Length: 330
Image 1 (cartoon, one colour):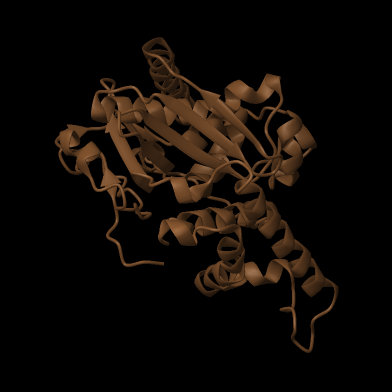
Image 2: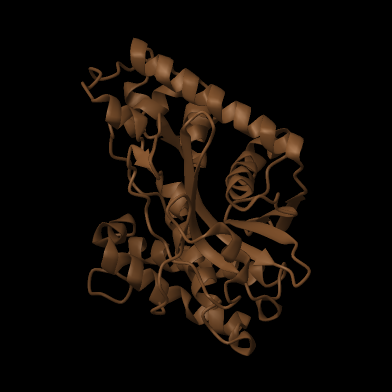
């Protein structure tokens, strides 16, 4: 990792009209928002990120478990693969353009894994013993196969873009804005490209497969959420939203317009209203769907014969600030 300073864009960040003037080789670094109730003198009513909004839309009970009960969830190999690949692609742009080759990127996979394990040692438990140790066995073989899958994702990236021809304006940029409703929207944008002619492209990497037509709107919600935040901050609607699916080698592109983003603003305001009512009533209803197959909380979900734990007593501040989800940061 390089020693570049963090970049945070929002109510307390640099003057908005100077953002596009940043040197194109200045990268962004991850920095969590403070989650304060007051932002630039505005007392916010609550905060939402794309993933937290997605949690509530998927299942209000899941939202409760993650933001109020704060129940632990084990890391999955798929989720950690996303973190690792994001790190490799972020760090790739620290290199001179001529060195951004598939071979160089593949060499970065194992060091990136070592960095993740150093920061979170419990990740190694997903695969048991380390490959090469005296205790290495089937679990270590799983690690080898998993690292191979990470390399496959990185290799596939180069079939979709040529990073030697790109100089992102921003990477892993934390953004936040307060709507007229006093709802704080925030999150991390993987990458922002600015063309010499001024067009802005917002890019997000996904290590999974591209969704079918029925799920595209759900996938684009996150990107429209970021487009809304950037529009409110910069006064200009991003030209292009681009989702890069490394699992299937596909790219989903969308050109937003003002009507799109105003609809997203109405949607997040309505979502926060529903969240506030659920918090007031203590009524966090489960919603059964195909996504339940990936949920860690089936054993305590009424839809699966379980019983939720008693609802914790929390302050209004805790409800108003659900924090960022891991998916918002990766």
